[in-house]
Image: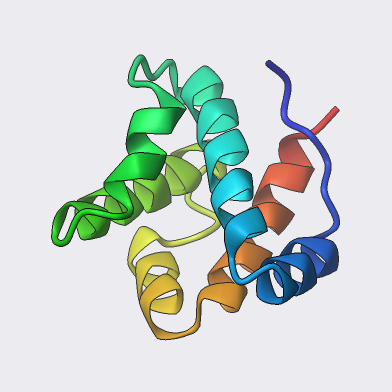
Length: 105
């Protein structure tokens, strides 16, 4: 699975207007792309379902941010991404999608 280029504005705006339903779909798809890039073996669906479990969701986001840091070659700091995700999620979506777009073919 190759990394798909997506417009960060589209991701943020559509996530907002669909009450984050698109955001969950986006997370699922990008988690699958990250699994391919970092040679992960856990199902993207399992990671996405983990977002609904208290305390597990923090771990899921932490691992997601770690993988973004890895594929971006430390261009994005995992702690900054996690804080952005917790404080104001659209910022994290924007930053993550920009990094993934750099890897898209």
